Length: 357
Image (cartoon, rainbow, N blue to C red; front, top):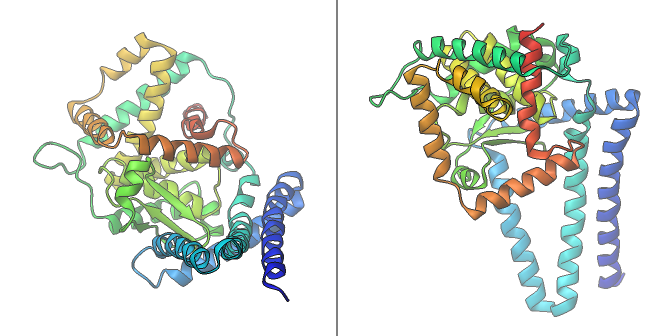
């Protein structure tokens, strides 16, 4: 078989696998029966991969990213230098085949989870349109809880939130999911704790990414250089993805509820803190006067943590973050969430529904 023919077969195989990946995703969207089967298989495979790679204390996914990109560049450069145009075509065909395999795995393990019934249905919540006053009342309720928890957590010499170590937080998050309202969802997916990012954490900060779920290894990764108030919430968010919650607003709400139900004050404070930020931003856009009224009730400790988070985020406001945001927005829209990165903030409706239940 000629080299050109082999390259064509590899390229076509990659395209077919990519189309199969899209077909699995669409099938899960249009057929309830297929959705149940595909989601069960995806959760089983994802959990098995997670258990397999959990033997390593570091995130295997980071090695996959780094080595994958390095090997892809080396393949293209080496084959192009040696064989000119034919070499480039052969390298490209190898990458297309590899990309097709990865797309099929990504779709079969994770994208099919987006067809699951809404988390509101599992929790018995009625989500609808709410008045600005209901938004203000819910924001005030969360602010009161946040003020109380702010006095129960440890703080550093500057008066800023100082939580327990990463592994302790991850263990507390797991226990909250196991024993709380989402115990049924927790039992169906991976129950291995997320891993703390090591090699790519600073890059993630510049890209505006606090964590991610990597289906190819089944790992949930949390950035290693996050500000303390973000860490518990991100652990809970990425853990939610690992047991089959796909949509970002639902993973966000799961993280919030995980915190509300946690017996660990660090987890409670971190998750309430981030839930409050989404509520606070929504109220700010809806009614400036009500926003001022509610914001004035925050304790000095909470305000200090809010200021620290703003300062931390400002350090990473560069054009690189705009690129990361655009890529993330495109990905989220491709999964059937037309609001893109705004989907994260849609958790507000779920929080209001929860407090109006």
